[in-house]
Each structure stands twice: as structure tokens, then as C-alpha cells.
Length: 274
Image 1 (tube, rainbow, N blue to C red):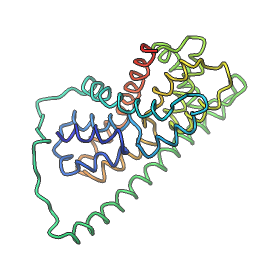
Image 2 (image 1 turned 180 degrees about the vertical axis):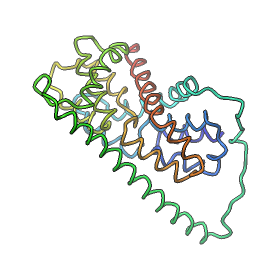
Image 3 (image 1 turned 45 degrees about the horizontal axis):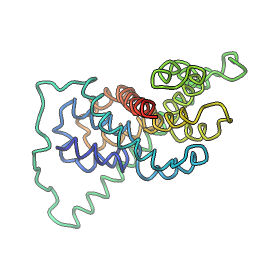
């Protein structure tokens, strides 16, 4: 159905482009199905950035592009599983994938015109919300910076989350001696973005993480579940289906949690296999 198409597309395209493929069906999706679409977007990365991330970590993770592609593929079904558990299907389920809505454009030129106008609105919406959410994170870190330094460094939300994530990364196979370092990477990825987290992973000194731990974290970091991406997703989806704005915003923070759990599950699978 529509959810399956969107989930499969998320392996190769971004969290806004994938729902665009099933845009006519979005308004008919149930709440649980909408959450699956959002979670799949948070648990994977776009094909356009895979090569970039692989370039960053190629010096410390052999065959990095293969691992990042594998991580995105494995995380897609994991995202569907987690989404089903967190927001179960209710009685309102509709077979959205079986519907065949008629085309609203009467000519090719009208379709081009409408697509251009819709695309501009989508871009403005996504850009505005991305700036706002990133600015809010920066503002919160500035407030925390007013407190005394902890461990010789300024207090930030990513550092706090890193401490919280330490036992979580231990559960997916990271040795406890390395859990604080790995948890810090997850904190950076969630509060800021996976781009900076991969840069930190590549810049870690020798001995900070074993080769096995680096590989596990390569998989665990491979997802868009962060606050900046939340702004992109909310901006994109609310532009496509404005009548479901309240529902999409309400599921936003939950989708970060579900997307993070999905990528952690992928990392755990790798930890079992190696």
C-alpha cells in the first residue's frame, strides 16, 4: 500500500521526498499509518547523503558506504515494527493503498504549474521550521551554558542526552568502558544531527572505541531522528496535508523516539553478528 511505497522509498530518498510519492493518499492514512511514514523517515537516511557520510568515516570504518546502505535498508522494517508497537492500528484503519484518486490536473502545463507552486510552499515551510527548531536547540544550549562547566566543558543538551544514552548503547553491544563516548555520539546525533555525529566518530582518538564499537555506532547513527529533521518533516507533511497539522505535530517528538529505537535495533543486530 501507500505506507509500503513510502517506507521503501525512504531507503533511497529523504523524509519529505518519500511521502511526496504517495501524497494523494496521505489524507486517507490512519493515525498509525501516518506514524509509520514519519518513523520510516526518521530511521533512514537519504541516498544523496550516504556517500558523504561514508567519506567522513572511511578512514576508520572499512567499506563504509556498504555499511551505511545496509543500515538504511535494515532500519526500514525495524521502523515499521517500532511504529506499530508505539501507535497500534485502531478501528479507523483504511485501505489507503488500494485507492486510486483521480488526477486533478487537466493538462501537462497545469500539472507543472501546480507542482511548482506546491514545491515553493513546501520549501518555505520546511526551511522556516528547520531554522526555528535548530534555533530553539541553540537557545536552550546557550541557557545551559550559563551554568558552571561540568568536567571542564560547557553543559549542553547533547552532553546530557549522551549520559542518558550510555546505558542504552551498552545494551546494544558497546562495552561499558566505551559507553560514555558512544552515548555522546548518540546525544550529538539526536540533538544536533547525524552529520556532526559521524564527524565526531571519525575524529575520535585511537582507542576511544574498538573497531567493533565503531561499526555498531555506524549503524546506530544512520538515521534522521533529530530535532532539525523534525522541523523538516513537520514542515513537509503539514504542507502536503494541512488538514492533519495537529495530528502530525502531535506525533513529531514521538517519531524521534521511534526512529532512534529503530536505528539502535539495527546497531544491536550488527553487535550480535560480529
